[in-house]
Image (cartoon, rainbow, N blue to C red):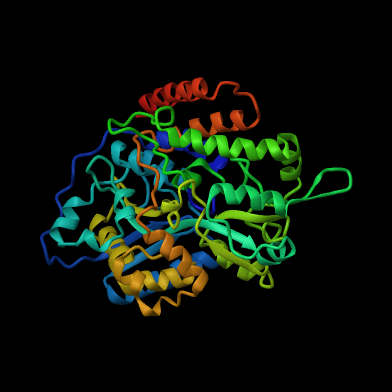
Amino acid sequence: MNKRFPRALFALITAASLAAACTPAPKETKIADPGTEVAGTVELWHFFTEREADAIDQVVKDFEAAHPKIKVTVKSGQDDSKVTQAIGAGNGPDVGLSYSTDVVGKFCASGAWVDLKQYIDRDKVDLNQLNATTRSYTEYQGKRCAMPFLADAYGMFYNKDLFAKAGLSAPPKTLDELTAYAKKLTVKNADGSLKTVGFLPLYDFYENAASHLAPAVGAKWLTDDGKSAVGSDPAWKTLMTWQKQLVDWYGYENLTKFRASLGDEYSADNAFQKGQVAINIDAEYRLAFVKDQTPNLKYGVAPIPTSDPARYGGGYVTGNIVGISKNAKNPEAAWELIKYLTTNDKAIVKLSGLLKNIPTTTASIADPGLNADADFKTFIDIFTNPNSSTTPPSASGPAYQETFGQFLNSYQAGKVKDLDAGLAGADKQINSVMTLGG
């Protein structure tokens, strides 16, 4: 899930708008012969706004300078809802830039975005230059309808001042250590209410999504045959048991009351940036928010603690994706733009520097011009770590994650008395939703 759109909002968008794109896939249009000069106008829709939209404009100008016969029309602030509705109505953009990898399966299966294989084969684009994880989340069942546009890696932020006050120095590396740190860092008011929370474990707080925490225990979402694995993979039970014990230590009602008092995740009132939460799960983009909104905050970053020390160093990886709309008016120019944004190392390094997201090609990651400070490098190391993983694409989009998220919210609230039976029921619900959605 991308940083700029809350998961609850994304769930509503998915249910309401992705259906508009689920029309039968059109036949593939014959592409131009190799070496054909591409010209004309291409329309790019993306979700970025303000400073980040300016960054896109800068790189688009570079593209136009390198392709003088192609003119790019950019529409910023266009989220997935607007893009998919436009595609469903037959008048979508040539190029769509999505903020979530969760829609890849839906777009590929429905034909909302075209298969890029013919363009890739014709232009002899080496996909091995892409990071392995980004290759996996930009295709579905062998069909590549998207290319990766920068990436996010999730780790842990910790407040150095609060650590020092509690007599702590290095970050926790295991879930058991995280529990001990969370308790030691927690401060209560005279009336017993929470003043400062060491780690706020609720699944629906900020970036504490199940997908972001799954790599901490190596949990699998789907079986080899594409069915739900949440009931059969014991790693989920390990994660849920650990989380529920910490919730119970705080008291669910105490946590929900405390959470209600906290500011918006993407504002200067972010609970971690204000020192209300000592340890927080977040991605590399938080570095830019802290620098802009709370420049005096003393903090450190590290991988998310794990159940098995052998898994330490990895994390959840996701990112933005870009593809050609099925009703693109100038698909050749659309491909030229996509190829530039996703395989031109110079352009990728520039975008990474401006947007403060992780580049996705092996050459751009190693580029000395990346200007990666120690904190940013920590997230690059998480991104490239073999223990890192992502959520698998599904024809139902993020429906399986949303359904499981509802179960997790019930479980942490104490509404599920038998965890094994609850997980078995969650399996059935997820499989049902995936069947309907697919």
